[in-house]
Length: 371
Image 1 (tube, rainbow, N blue to C red):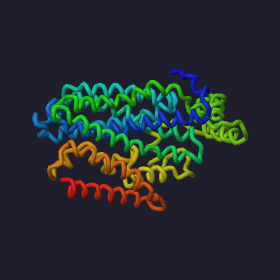
Image 2 (image 1 turned 90 degrees about the vertical axis):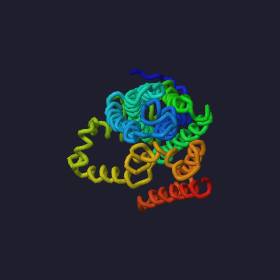
Image 3 (image 1 turned 135 degrees about the horizontal axis):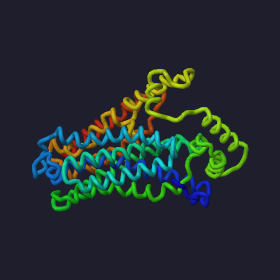
Image 4 (image 1 turned 30 degrees about the horizontal axis):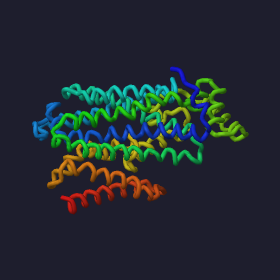
């Protein structure tokens, strides 16, 4: 898969903005795709179309409903591993490009679903694309940003929560069409996810691949050129960074799921680096830490709520699906902006505690003052 040289026309600042922009679009897609099923499941026409309930929207087969939602995450797991494998062999940009294709096809199939089986297949395809995008995007950002800006750039993962909020608000807006009993209400929500995937598909090939990948396949001159253009200078600092990347690339091996499993059980390639402990620490922190990115949310309970938020909020009282989406969207954004100012060190527990606290406050406000 070829590359373009469009990025060479940009200034270093413009190139960095372009990289971050496409990264934000990728993460926005992941967030939107997680939140969208909350509004879809609240649509009576969807419930009837896929055969999980009655025409009035009452779900009679909750197991089937949960299966349609959760099968997406099986695709995400496969896509994440496959995306990492592809990114090491054909490049970060090409890996994202393929992820975009899966995401667009999956989104279009979901919007056109005619049965539950149709929907399940579409959800798996979308999950593969989402997993690839979510797995490769942070790698691309970290490998192109400077050390002093890397943390801030990776913090743009907050955009995932903005995507969730947009999904809630879109559900709110579409619920006014035909009193909520319209195919547009759920089909448009699912089709909308194709927009960010399409933007990525059209623009991602305009960016250069990362210096680390280029060095790993022996394209050292190109790696140096990308570093110089991204950093905006040609001095000894850039030369030292290039030599470090080249040294690491020459010593590293291609990634694979088997290699990751070996690391988890203490059989990694570098015994002195405690890779096993680091890998387990990463997994545990994903479970109990602040859920932001896809891999961090799977076991934190966040995704358990995302697919059923409309129903859960409506059950205690007279709040309708129209009101549920915006209310939860407000608390979702507020959770990741105001409360994220708390320090995450020295303990990983405070972020999770404040997350639980904020969700509790949001639930209390909705039930006590709105219902």
